[in-house]
Image (cartoon, rainbow, N blue to C red; front, side, top):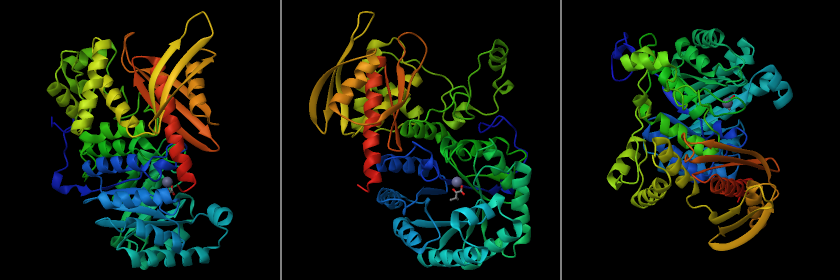
Length: 522
Ligand code: KIV
Ligand code: ZN
């Protein structure tokens, strides 16, 4: 057994083809309702993706807003070896904006697209085939004047008539596209069909060997990862995917699943990626924290239960030999196999080592802050588990540099109403306090926040989850607010559920404020 996977690869490493991993968490992923990210969050995520050695980061859609443009530009400026890509529609102004945003990258790429399916051309573009072919030639050629590395996508390719798809791709290749991406935009295809489509395109198009073929599969039928792998078997050498499968509607192919699928089944899939899988768990947590979208417990690779064994038969098998029920090592994807319990006697060095094992590298100031919070937690809670530390550090990172912060909270709860909350917020450095009653303590807390920071947002979701087991467990609270089509989520953890609730609400309000500013171009 290798330390990499629990299977025994039978394909020699040298015989494997390299598959490029193109991450679109910050572009397609951010397009899912409520998932938009701040510039600071995107910069942090991009740094982690580059450390993880993804090949291409699609950092945004620069023409969409000034905020998006700035994000892509900032990520391009901080990038080292990774290719930084921006998305652009076929219009020349979009492409110019995109070219400007990615220019600072060492390896800039423009990804331009236009729809080619009958339904999109007729109802969305209101353009005929000839006009679409003309736009493809002009847009790709224009992008090639700005950068060498141009990717082109026929949107809704899997519902496009095959002969027209070939014509469109031919135009794009002749105009200078280096990567041809075949989006299953509406997640309609299935693996045999999608794999065959890629193969047939490669066999039919004259200059197919001059470009890299790419998959971009949506998950509307739950087939995005299977379709992407089928595409690779059919000849694609780039997979577009997103952490946690984030993306429009049901999402994109999950990056962690395609990477581990290729790795664990290297015995029959002769391909390799350059991704360091030990950072997958950390990336998953970061994206969940940033977006406020929880990762489902039974999610492949990064779900809380992905390596948990509860039934007696399975536990017995695992104790005898882990290969009985595990096809990969949890450590390979950055999940510590044992949760070493820490407590109030644990020292700073042990704490720093633990953070490192969990994939966090904090600067001195953040480490001091996290250690202080860990000690506070250990005073309240007998055993501090890995999940407690993860919740604590993620919570600290989420709250850093926010305009509004919870300072103090006192709540009167119980059978004798009215329930009451006295709450102090710091808003742009100025502290103020309000007293409010409510229909229960949580309502009282939220009413107090509303008094101090008046807003129209509607509470869409309020969810409490225990981080670990036991009555002294920390609570993680998730709050989702919506206002005029904008959605923002906030997440916070604390042993006191009401404190976590207040902080999650304030966190969501901060994010809503960022979103409002982004919409108005501020
Ligand atoms: O799903 C899709 O078609 C897209 C394109 C812009 C590549 O996201
Ligand atoms: Zn897409």
